[in-house]
View 1 (cartoon, helix red, strand yellow):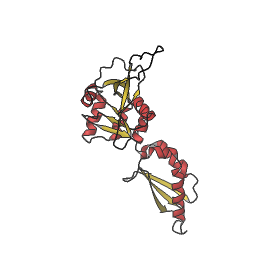
View 2 (cartoon, one colour):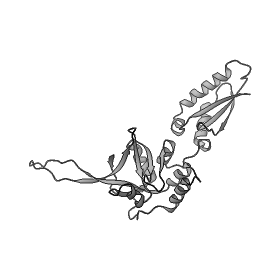
View 3 (cartoon, helix red, strand yellow):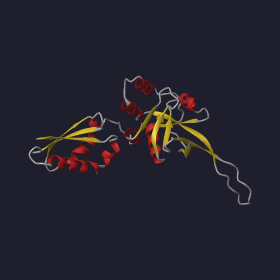
View 4 (cartoon, helix red, strand yellow):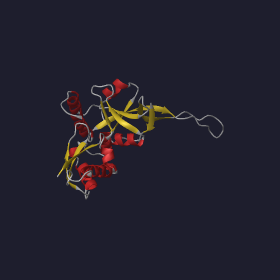
Length: 237
């Protein structure tokens, strides 16, 4: 377990620590299988959450006359380390949920967006919501990135920035007549490449697919927003 210093003042001064009814409703619907993780992330974009903080003892210093300085403490946010060594940031919807996890921790109210940004700054790779229940959820990868960027996380096939990036990357590709984009069960997207004369020119379909894959691999936005990657299919035109 590690800790990092919190800003001195919270914008949620006077918060009573109760759970946001709208966020609670989404989490319960998620637990019941009625909505997916996209809905949870969407609710968090505008939500207040509680970060667990603990008192950290400052290192003992030495006064100019040689005497030991007095001990000082400061409040720090807690992160957790998984078995794989990666850091995660816990956050909670209410004081009750936080206390169920650690009765000694104190709540620090913050926006979920700011928590995600702070977690990235500290090298955390996941956000864990209500670790001790009533509904525990993990955001990582593209969903955590979207929260840190204060935007709604969308399926790749519905994300206009992803679709634009694909179009820009493949624009002007020799032999490519068009591209169909669809959802995929195994990847984030399936791209069906319509290749001119693929049946008539040996190797042409393979060459177009290879060039397309190379172009797409250089797009930074696709690397960070696509967790499972792209499937490429080729069809002659």
